[in-house]
Length: 347
Image 1 (tube, one colour):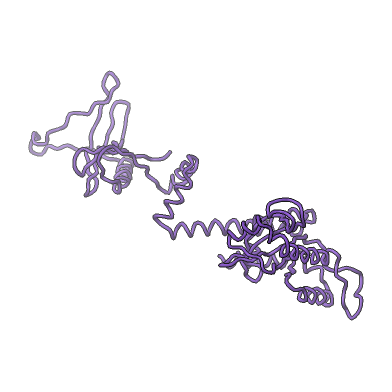
Image 2 (cartoon, rainbow, N blue to C red):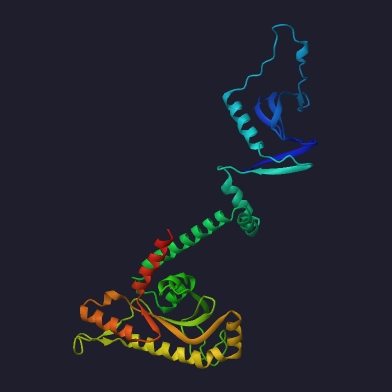
């Protein structure tokens, strides 16, 4: 349960606050009546007694001037009562002394989680975040980065688990990269990529319509001037090479899926450059966002390097992808390593 303290101004620069119950029996109670002023907290210890009609009555004050020599009044505070009194006084030290009636919420390590949950449950999450950014922008940035890092760690673990799962098809990987565009952002020559549309139409229709040639991703490099980058996604189990032995001079045959992926990307690049980007609706929408198409680059995500178990196979694949102009061919395990580097670099 959260702690609240009510205040009521009783004069210039001074307020009464809620009474502090220190001890209670069936018929008596010991109360501290605190006041807050500019200099701190002051108050009175007062005994109450329950009357016959079950109401609490404050015992008549003792006039110390009427005491005889060597007479006195003593009120003992036990360990628990002293602890309560000190804690409650401490809560009131920072309470503002303001005119009128006010109610303040006391937040401590004990109840901070409950308080935050109540704020979020009442729909004040945006106001909470904006207020945090206003009063402590560095802390807001730190928390934001921690949240990003936590989400990336979870995505990285999903990537590790899924890369060995043969039941994960192209549509799964497309959705995965859709949510985790940061992997492309740091993974490909450190170009920052921004998704424009999933399953885009490269020609013959609008960017958000249907028909025409389709590709897995339409992303744009993010900068002062942005350029379109087209991405095709296969699976980690898509073969890179084919055949049971090299053809000649140690060279192996390229898999149909690899060459088809390159061919499709080249066709999509050409179609987008010639037709898609010049559609009025497409051009207006993209150029309004400072995105321009000159000669679009392409990215093909396909297979894994562990398919290349011999030097000849590795050489064939590396020579091929180095020879392809305007398209970067990257394997899933390479992309995973780059994602791991990004997460580690942020820690």
